[in-house]
Length: 111
Length: 115
Image (cartoon, rainbow over all chains, first blue to last red; front, top):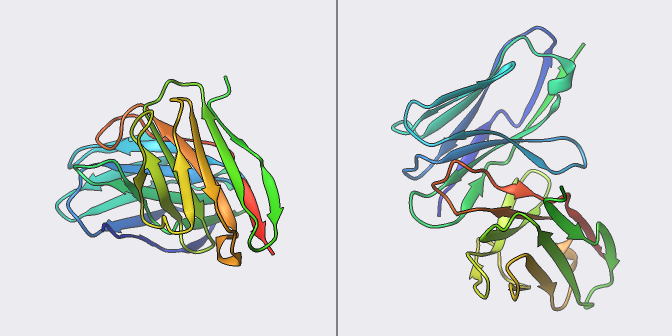
């Protein structure tokens, strides 16, 4: 079974600041996905990372994948209130059809 | 553009009752998944299907059954509901399984309370 850990679980940050969310996983994989969930809502796909060294950026968010370290990061640049949400990483084994989710990081951006 | 539709959105059951949650997708996806989301535990896979007529167990399958009689529909059944099954249930679909540049598409969730 693949285990996925996210840190931190809760993050409160001021607008304009930078921060990084970490996603560690226990088994070799080069398939990692980041999602955003607003309170009471569904999950929205943010990034798909499919190779070692992959980096994707969208607006103030940038995601990267280091398969050797079994680590993905989601970096937030100059946070704004609209980024307040829960962020999940999900990892899939290189073989098989199951996705394993982290516990989520609840981000609150304070004006 | 419906995507993934879950019914019902909310439901309250008494312990021991049974019910079926319906998931429908209009994207012609082969793969469909049922997850449960509990506070502090992320999403956990209950069952999944890699195509019409197929089902497989995920991480937490006990107490649930599924069926995929039609490609577009994936049903999740609770045979005898227990308070531990109080949760938010999400259905997801995807064009292939892992190893694809296509993420899963999620429904809006079903909030289920078992009294």
